[in-house]
Image (cartoon, rainbow, N blue to C red; front, side):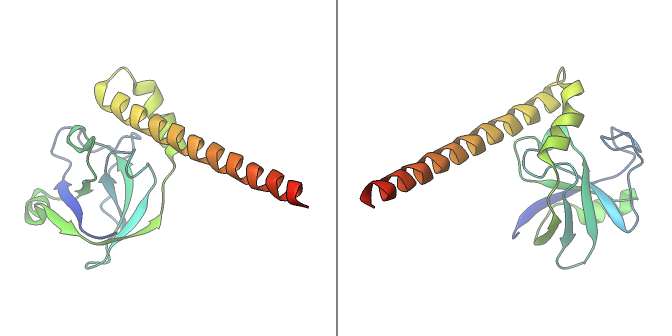
Length: 150
């Protein structure tokens, strides 16, 4: 994926030391990252092309909703400030799960940020289901018309 906008955050910011799953933010081999889960679902693993650093989406943030920005966890305030805002190329190693995203967000639906992601995820699923149904109808129509010709 090319030209992905990234920002950085650290544990001293609002939200503290834990990610959206209640686990400690990771600054180790595979680091934590936050996104709008309707764009990059929970569990999405990616590598930054230039630095080879690996991240996993395990958090979200209010400012990320409705954007394709990824917020990278940095263990120190200095590293966060050094990162700033960058447009980078990433390799998606594994897409996360929209289903898992919805499972985590569901109990939080009374809050605006999760509610907006839930709505976007549900809309994607409706569009996807509609496309599958349309493709199935077209395939069925082709099959029945080829039988008529035989």
